[in-house]
Length: 150
Image (cartoon, rainbow, N blue to C red; front, side, top):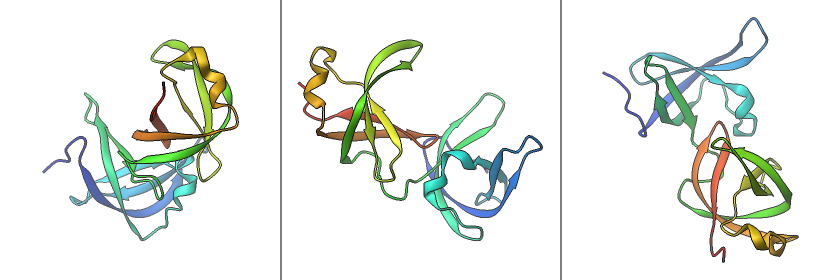
């Protein structure tokens, strides 16, 4: 019995521990009683509690069989549209290219970013709320698409 990529499963939060270099991890147990480590640094606002059951998507399974988990976000839901507050513009490395992006703020105050369709009029977003579709979450970071970006 194995877990399947892009499917959601229940995991029990067994404990929180740290590696010798000090990186904190949650120890999760899947439905088949296999244990998995979830890096704590990406999921502070998720308020994971020892002894509770959470739902995680299987983000990917690499060629060595390592399973990468992504917990369901406590507020945002995949495929839905949300308002984000504009906080600035910057350049970010996206798929090995430096690109212009809009910096946004989520409900927890975390910085997220979105790549506009048309970089020529990025200033139209200044001091605005930007309506975006949430396509994916990876390591707590959002992959967003602006709705109605001319």
